[in-house]
Amino acid sequence: MTTNAQTEVGFHARQHGRWHWSEFAFWIVVLAVGLAFPSRYLIMTEILRLALFALSLDLILGYAGIVSLGHAAFFGVGAYCAGLLSVHGIINEPVLALIVAGLAATVLGFATSFLVIRGVDLTRLMVTLGIALLMEALAERFSNITGGTDGLQGIDIQPIFGVFAFDMFGRTGFFYSLAVLFVLFLLARIIVHSPFGLSLRAIKNNPLRASAIGIPVNKRLIAIYTVAAFYAGIAGALFTQTTALASLDVFAFERSADLVLLLVIGGSGYLYGGLIGAAVFRMLQELFQWITPQYWMFWIGLVLVVIVMVGRHRIHAYALWLPNLILKQIAGRKAAVVLTDNEAP
Amino acid sequence: MTYALETRGLDKHFGGLHVTRNLSLQIRPGARHALIGPNGAGKTTVINQLTGVLEPSAGRILLEGQDITDLPVHKRVLRGLSRTFQINQLYPDLTPLETIGLAVSERLGGGGNWWRRMGTRDDINAEIADTLERFRLLDVMNDRTSTLPYGKQRLLEIAVAIAAKPRVLLLDEPAAGVPEGERKDILAAVAALPRDVTVLLIEHDMDLVFSFADRISVLVSGALLVEGAPDEVARDPQVKAVYLGEAA
Image (cartoon, rainbow over all chains, first blue to last red; front, side):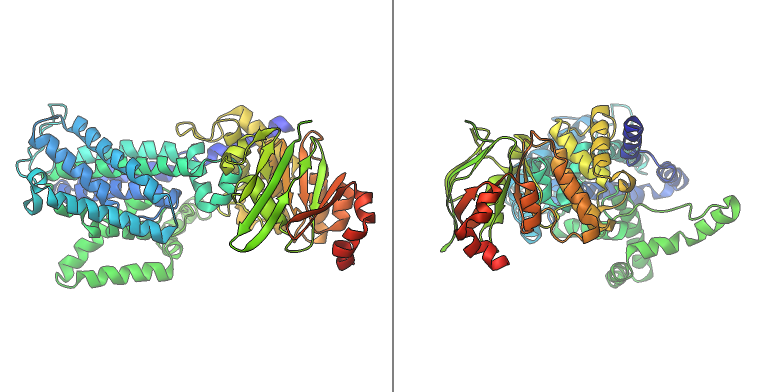
């Protein structure tokens, strides 16, 4: 009996981390879209970058419950670091430069994590916002290094591994970004389904109980905040490498704020929210800018209000109504497609 | 002798409010010790100081002879001091399986692993299964905690504390708010605790206290009034006047 129970417990404990077929489908669709629209590499690359950046925020917001309005601080450090490495010819190989830029953001993440883990949501919003503003001001002050408002001049990204050169259509940039996103996604997936990842969810749910079963709450929050900073730094470095630009707006408040919107659209705490949110947000933006170049912000705002009022779960249910109906006719199965439960940030 | 848990001159002020007054408690290894007192006597404040949620204004706390006064909450748990809360402190979005799994992983030193998947260590799985079975939670192990009936949540609250394999367990009103029909499960779980685990019980329910405890301390206005065996305490005129008199 007990052995049975043990096997059963093991099975259900591993269940959460098992690959669902819809996840395979998701990545196949992403790759297929990439191959199908070669004329749209630039915007698709932008979406991938945004997705990686949102994945970073999802790690701290969706799993550990840390709100942030200053995630652009790490994005910006990664972006400038990648730019400076290139301009001064310190590291010419993009992948290596990418990692070094990510580590630079990690250092800032670790250093500021001690400020962020203190206090509650509102203080965290203010502290993270403040850190991003500080970084922006510093970048402006030291314009001899950063190029100030003109941005960093003379960024020339060398071929990846010395083989794959960045082309003007953005093909290399796209597949490079996709590979980076996929690898970091896999890493995030391992992290969130580990005991460490579960302990983050426990802390988000009830920090008092978490510490009362022996979880070192602060240590865990510092760890995940630092990891998230690494992810955001990589996203920033990808920005510089794929656009050959780095200017003060990498630290912009809008960048941090958009990120929260992405997670509202896509949902948080299941890793795909930021990815889906990035695609939906960017495409809505494109669509509304095309319909009404002047007032597109109005429509984005309206969509957000509707999403929050109607509730993402209900929208998902509507969106999946037709596919489920078809599946039911074919396979005779009930509600074959369901999205993972998750809550709005 | 070395006590399982001891306080020496414990004192706590909240501004001008004096809630714990020079409290020295000695709890013997393996004891079933109850801490009782009228509402507002400061019982939960004592528990919060013992577990590290609150910092005492003065005095020391010793766990098996070791001074733990300055240790943070989670380190005391790893030293063998665990507790249940008067009001359930659970993870609404997690399942009982995950809740117990976390406590066991943390104790066996796998809690910080970020590269290993949950459920891949047999020793951890075995203990989770054992705990869930003992508390009759196996059939609901995959339900979200927030959807469980209150009685089951209360059982889970105790199961989590015990999954930490404490040497000293603090039970803060374990039967509080549990409907009559589900009470016996809770009481059975409390009675079935291993004999070598020292238990400090805080409870309003006198039937439970007198059927469970072999030693009782009475706390009034933050100070120790009387301590003794249950029958001594029941006979004590001071206790009758101050506490049992009021309750009757």
